[in-house]
Length: 321
Image (cartoon, rainbow, N blue to C red; front, side, top):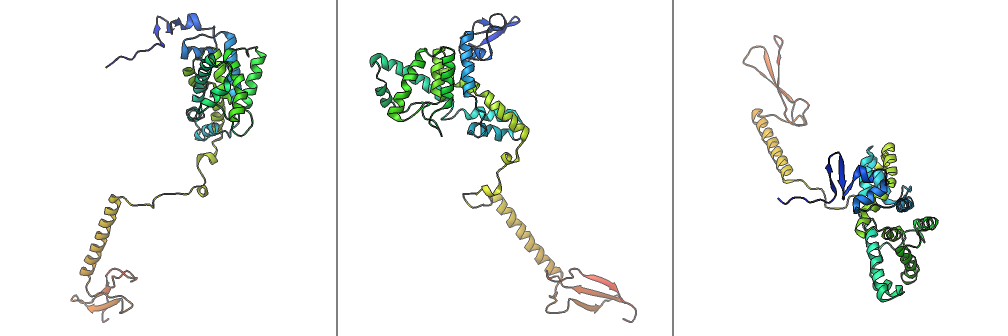
């Protein structure tokens, strides 16, 4: 069996080697949570000012709105009372056509745009027309994505708007609006910032999914606390079955057939043991005859289902009866 190779690191004499650096000696106290996340993906340690920009991206992507469908899924899963299920389901929802993979696709698009402009300077329109899709463009239910506006404001405040890829993005936005009538969402905006921080497109989906975790954590924890019955099951009136009619399995059919045969055999056996019985609608339900034993009368009873008396009985007659 082929050995599994890893570049992540290993334990070594009271410390850990992580991408060639010592965890406690070289990293502890020199970066933040998000800085460690980027390092764990790429082996690149960011400066504190760069990590602060990542923090701003995370805040801009935070979504307290519970009716957005990924947050709604987190609440549904957590309504059982267990918040980890909600976090896991919410995180899984990001692996979709409108999820974190758009960040990687948008990052690759900016690299293609950069290569295109080297041969066709300032020809953004030709680039937009030639592409079948513009990853991350198109805003649902509103004219602009307010998260992009908030991210731009934070970059202005930090004097980080001069990055090469952010500049490309700002020049691409109006051309896409004119040529395709599409505005950018947070995905291409974040991708441009990540590229300026030296983060490769293939590392963007896991990083973006991590930035979304505060949102899912908030909804999952509250959903687990509320345990809303309306999220635990659908009301019957909202459910309609569409499909084949119910059918019985061959095993169930065979069992019913065997039970019917046993029932018919039981009826025939009862009839043979009690000859001459008749329904009370045609004759008396009881008939008496003298028993060979003196003073004893045998009462025969109708065995038909409609007869009130169903079993023979014996009674002691009084002398001279």
